[in-house]
Length: 349
Image (cartoon, rainbow, N blue to C red):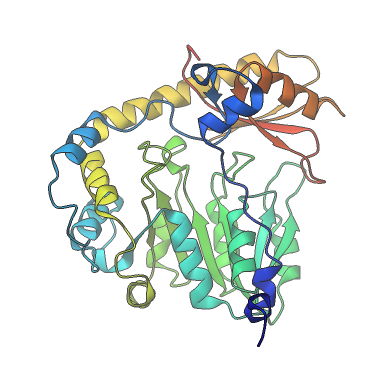
């Protein structure tokens, strides 16, 4: 009789766990500080939280004993109005992370490849690993811009897709339309992850009408403050969307997330005012950080700012901030040695 470990897929048994953001209780315990002193600037979360209408809608909804609509009729209708894209081109997901995972399962067989311009969001390589595929990392240039020629040179017969965020996480810069067209013209699946779109207003969505190989992702975690409820969407070619609707789990978006999304879209005024406040605070943070000697601050069009600490000082600065209850994202790899990313918080802290 085989051991249970022998039945596991080999690539799954070797998988490295994705390191998400720890809860505040864990952060407080690790830093040895009271919970109320925790300032979370490590997950690019919205410091203002969701619309007030979300709590009201969640509290008044009475049908949590029912299953969600597998066809996502209300969700897709509301998202169509919000995105300006036809319902048949939209799929809602348990966060945009689920849409990433579904795309990987739709396009990748073991041994296939995707291209990711690095540094970038870690979920792409993680999801590729889960699929038994390989994420081919192509370094960005010295300004963290996508290197189009390097990407073209990395394409092989096994390459199926190119994934990137715009604005990029963690660098905060955007992909231009010209760069996107160059990637789309390869004929590969091109996934534009626009999780931070609302903080910059630049989107590749208009190109959906020209390129069947383009997928645009959006999330309600950042601008709408719904990170804990997990709701996102993908806009894509109608046939591709129909295929995804047919292979996704039938009840992938829970009713609480649906109720929260609908409430958020009925109260976009206050949410966009908060986005404006975050953008304003981002500018203030950038100016203040630029005044600190020895730190290189990268301009950002997202809700975070990336900084290069003096050589060998990154971990020291990060740990000192943790002891003070301010939790940031520290990077310790060849591409981002001594870099720290800070989410944009409220002006008062």
